Image 1 (cartoon, rainbow, N blue to C red):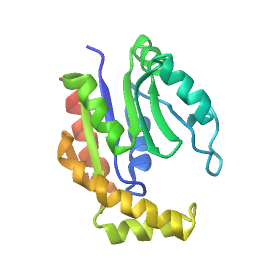
Image 2 (cartoon, helix red, strand yellow):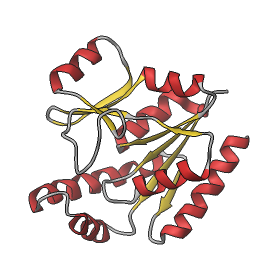
Image 3 (cartoon, helix red, strand yellow):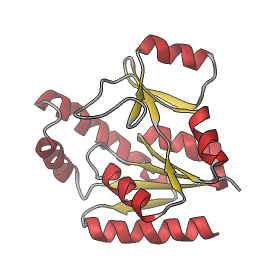
Length: 187
């Protein structure tokens, strides 16, 4: 059976750090690169971190039914999972690992059902999340406030996931996730 592992979390919860850890730990996992209309941050590269598209190109792909799922997170800010990415990973005999926003994670779990293990990474608190985002220094104060408001909304979806991991101790979170993935892959 083709399998997928879905990681979702409010921005700044440590999700990407945990996904990168899993990719190093499990050779059968392969990252599914998402498509987005947002601009690259820092050293992000097209085709490596994301497939960066204009809103017009993204909407054209929607019309072409090119996505497993997609979400308009903010006005003209789309994220989505390309069908070709999933098929390529499965064809190579690997397990797909997704790093997606919360609504995308809920959608993917509904689509893949028992083929999927969905994991919600929760921050210890909204205040600690705000501190992480400030420390990250990739967004201005207004953008951080928007992210915090969104995070508070996203936390309401935690129970729609198979497992919730509170990331207050990174090493403990890594160990918990390793156990979950090991059991899921070998089931």
